[in-house]
Length: 371
Ligand SMILES: Cc1cc2nc3c(=O)[nH]c(=O)nc-3n(C[C@H](O)[C@H](O)[C@H](O)COP(=O)(O)O)c2cc1C
Image (cartoon, rainbow, N blue to C red; front, top):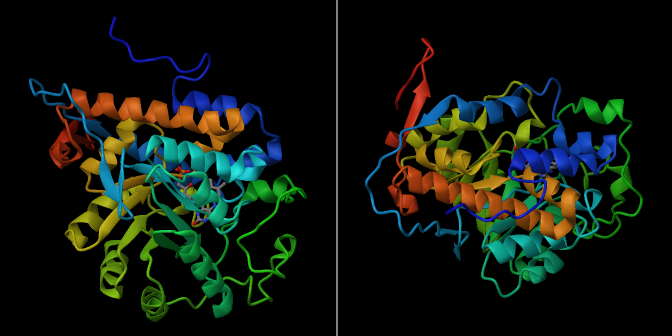
């Protein structure tokens, strides 16, 4: 028998982890994490888009060693996967972002911390100390420039390698579960990354320190790039047009993302968006990807379509909900094994072997054809 290891009695895939993790959450918290905006079209299509593409394996290639290592945010990492910013890991488990950080670091993955995290960026970076992975700080720009700069300087001080500006959030998406469940912030949670004096329980558009900057334009992107030593990424790019503007603005890269379907419902799935963006950017800046990844083969498909690095938002939350830090580690072990097997069975012994020609797309007549 040469089967890979069994890590848990109940969880053998991310689908199992979602089911088992969600069982441990209240309806209000579970739906906050698992749902998105309006009718969940984009959220569900992010997942479905991967199934519209199949794999074209190559055989009789030496895959006795499979190397998944790559570089991201200037760090050499063990696999092309990291954690996207997701607010309030503390609602899923008391380990919160510290547990997520430890699991990421041990597995050689990068992590981007949400502005709305329940631990400070300094503590989250320290939790992963010694493993060599890198961290990013996510920032949703607000009207008050001092507040934005406070977040940026804090991240620099903590040793963050990247600043991830979320640009799909001028208005918050209509997340119907939050109305239906009368979503309220649990009172034990703190938000230490926010500047002092801001009450997280009272976020209002009338206070410039908490009001999203709805006039955030490309000139401000350039200003941010000039104001920090960190690599700057724009998160929430879905079109080739904006990817090209991003390349001209001086950012290090973009994150092709639709916020996991939590913002503009009906927006194109991120996997469908990727192809045009890759073709337009032609290697000028880094292209990162998130949305709908639930298996190692999804990571493989995104890389084959031209992504440089992949991120997941909900998976670490399901891991935390299931078993704190251990649950997050479990998720990463599963994804590592799945990606390794997919690469090996497609004849790829390193990431640069993964190509578009490994993909076949569903055609109108129901068959799959080489891309
Ligand atoms: C519960 C939750 C909270 C999130 N909070 C943030 C956030 O604070 N900032 C942000 O830029 N994106 C946020 N996102 C979006 C994620 O960064 C990411 O784009 C998305 O989860 C990717 O899709 P996936 O969950 O299918 O992997 C959040 C997503 C979820 C599920």
